[in-house]
Amino acid sequence: MQMNKEVIIKVENINYSYNSIKVLENVSFDVNRGDYIGIIGPNGSGKSTLLKIILGLIKPDKGSITISGKKLSNGLDSCRVGYVSQRISQESQDLPATVYEIVESGLVAKEKLFSNGEKHREKILNAISISGLKGKEDKLIGQLSGGQRQKAFVARAIASDPQILILDEPFVGVDLASQDEFYRFLRKLNVEKGLTIIFVSHDIDIISGQASRMIALNRTIVYTGEAEKLDEKKLVDNIYGQKFTHIHHDR
Figure 1 (cartoon, rainbow, N blue to C red):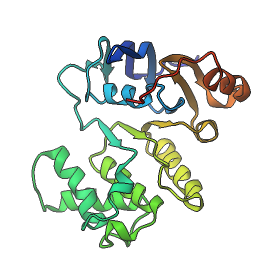
Figure 2: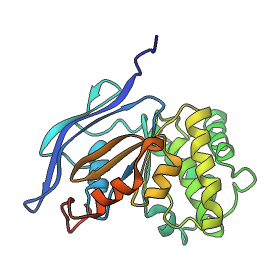
Figure 3: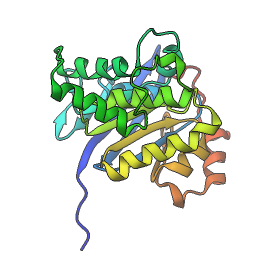
């Protein structure tokens, strides 16, 4: 007998408009604990807006988000969710900060205090080690490759042991030679650490090749299900064909 999976995020009937343009309409889905979900859609499909709503950065016009059984109302409990934005790796190239300092900044933000205690340091070094950056603690972030920089910011996000990791276009700035390694790293976090992962991409090959479950979005949900059972041609026709409403700004 199959046991019911625990729903860790419930998205219910989300609607959002920007300047009278509908960006999201009647978006509903569940995320189970341990899921590895890829959200795909063309530019302007509302992917980034959906993530901002889940993160509590903007409020929907209608609908609700429930995380770990609690309605999202007055901002996100950031200790439960780690977030890596699509631009952070590229914008960090000139930061005069080491890998250790980058990871520490995330832990300090979550714990809301400064601490140089052994437990604090252990969390930072453990996140760095898990991310495959052991030995690079004192390297300036700008001295790393794009893939290594992205790993450093994932380490920053997971230093406080979140239940959920959300990544917005995590492969932007990651060189092709490093992409496979980065994919394996995310899969390891998902399988071995039990981390629930949601990542957004406009690349259907990345989603179908990495995620175990896919959500196709263009203002509303077009497809949700197991990535390996996806009919890619049909989905591409639906997403990029005439059946999809074009939105001018991916907000």
